[in-house]
Amino acid sequence: MIRFKRLDHFHVCVPPQRLQEAKNFYADVVGLKLVDRPDHLFSSPGYWFDIGNVQLHIGVEDALLQSIRHTAMEVADKNDAKTHLRQHGVEILPEPVIPGRDRFAFIDPFGNRMELLQIL
Image (cartoon, helix red, strand yellow):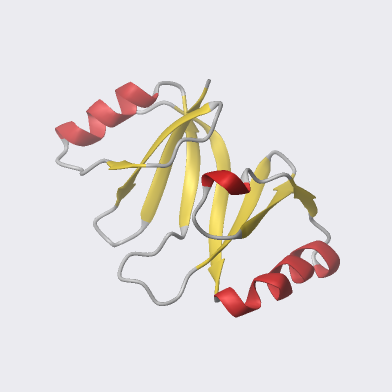
């Protein structure tokens, strides 16, 4: 069983040439607060914003076979969640290391990427 705690963040993608436009839209029009993103941990640019106790992550992507768009949910025990999913035949995908978060992803049967994480 997976014990969910909260939604952590959701990730939307924009074309690379429109990243600055997206930053301006979410900061200036929507009014979200820009927060620090550990850019050195990622291979592509992006921005993170606070929305109450959830974050919006904006990244770039051209038309790719598998999208990086995803929703991330905090769980009480990442290992229990991983075991549960594997027992149901779900392939576990590794995620880049972000300090303070132990995480992995999976693709649901409908092509949606989902991230589960445990705050350390």
